[in-house]
Image (tube, rainbow, N blue to C red; front, side, top):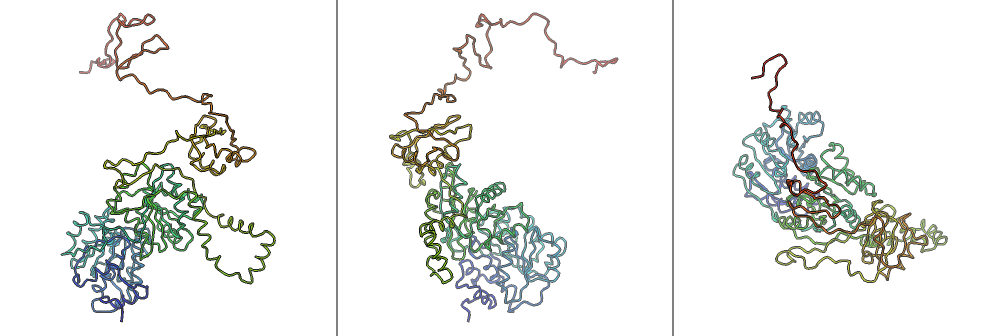
Length: 618
């Protein structure tokens, strides 16, 4: 006796084999006896088990009173999905779900060999899964027989309309028999979806799965505020902090995908790209690399990642903010699936905080606001993972014991432990040092007009300090954002011990707390150089900012528009371009503003021309 009542026995057996102990809310909703054989418009968030849901809903329509399908000929059901990856995933899900029914599932997706698909259709299939454009091609070429169709399923219908497939969908639905059953599944039901349902469904039952408008409880949302220049470094630190088995980084453009892929490859991350410019074969290889562990980070656009399902995906990073709440929920829904936990991290530049608050509020999400993991926090997390490694709990076997004794005798326990630490950190990318963002609180924690409770700290009251000179300046592209991390690493400092930085063309002046100055000077070594050949010199007193190349700021004073002024350096009058000079206000060294005597000039452009040897044009 199966534990799943009301389900076709062959499908219940497949669920038990797959390890299902209970059904999700959307799966239970489509099994309601009140639905029967009616059309349905189902709204449920991504990751809620929609593929299995419509597979369960289709079984009574396709099988009737039989337990197994007969010989395959013309298709009985058609499932339409927006992207190749989602269509292939739907086909895989239906294959195991209908395993004990003898069903044949065929796919028709763009980017695959059309001749192979046509041969599969000629051999016969009970269920066909495809993308709108390719299905329309097969129908137009009379390769896909629609006469025996009993049901049509539109999966991710809202996404298909967003991608411009309305005309293809209408063509497919018009080609299907009028007495078919139509099931539409969508994350949201905007006006366009409601209009499509009204035109192609008959008395459809509206099903809203429980928790449709709520965030997934298995996903931890984190809003990480960063300075715009630290955006990529923050992503690196988030990846290093969580060390997820699989992670996906979402970008809004293909160019951003290519840029981050190259950057992370250089940082020793095992990364693959997923964008619309890749062929189907390249995209399949990228996803397979994620599944078998050859790659751990996937950088993708929204369209390319639509519908992909990676079992070990534990982390989603929004490198570029999504444009609407639906995209945010879809991206985040790639993790936290089937009861597994996941993290969705939004990288938020300082200037986009208010927009992000509105986005999260419209999506019904209450994230944890924080700063990205710092370099010290990443290193601390690495140490915690190392101490918790199961290898330390395993007993030493006889094969290892002899060599362990040799290592300890030759190098000592401390040196062996240091070597183990270096080996463990060798293949990992070093964390990045981030600048501190402006303290921020969500609008619910600010005053009525949204003002911050705390003002950003200033360096004017830094206290007792010592100034140092560094032999690098603006002409060498020196910037505080890389000078500060370099000084912290080589000089054993923290950012709070560094005060003002004054940039000059050929050198830079750095203010360091007096209590830390001696420690800093000793840490950089006897040659007093950092980062290879940057010389450091201790100054007595304040730096001399009047040396060559330093231009003190000038007061920002401009004459009122339309007014004129006098230049103290010369006796000549400066006129505004629009001001007409007056002859009575001329200076002695200027020529009078008088017109030269002579005949007035003729407007040659308007004078009629005379043709050579002919009459004037008239």
